[in-house]
Length: 289
Image 1 (cartoon, rainbow, N blue to C red):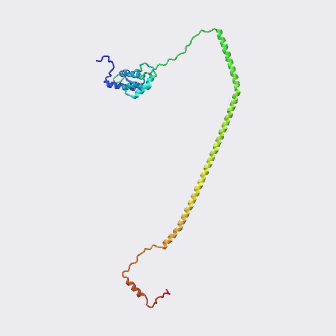
Image 2: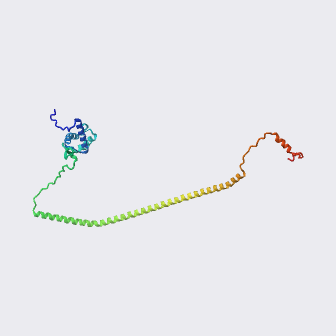
């Protein structure tokens, strides 16, 4: 039996309804306002406001109890860090529902549910305390005239005192102005001298660098001249050596060494030599040899 169970089922099962409300509540904590249907907004208001009251007591137990419903760490941290501080002085009624008309298609009533303390346009202006003014009876004319005369005398005396003080201060001001001018001129001169010294230093540095570069150029030219001389000497020696080598090549033509043919019969040439010698020639003695 459903006695005294008046909450809206929203045409969903209990698990589906709890998951939907948890998601809507977490998005409300993060974004501070949501566009939904009027029935869902009313159900969400009943679901969210007890959680917001629990956030006023920032303890681990209350955080865990809120996390049971929201199932989102980001929403829980946003609720306990920022929203709970803004809502600390409010005794309930943390949300506001604003109707926005009917939806096209199914003609459902739409609305905007938001946190009250985050809409500055609808926040009530703080009452400015007005200073209380009391009326008093007017005094007689004689008293007024006497007071006016006293004020005029005081004003005249103050004007005269200011004139006297300004006249005394004028020469002192002139002296001060002259001193300031002299100081400024001295500072300008010092700055000009410093600038001139810096220019002279720069010129000296430029000259030193130019002289160093000239010395380097001269050294490089001397080295190049020595290298050229060495190259010319080598060329002349090569030219002298070339004709000598050519002559040697002409004098000593290449001759192929041929091995003498071995005679087949060693006895025949000896016999021929004996035949060729004439008989009348006498053999040479040892002294003639």
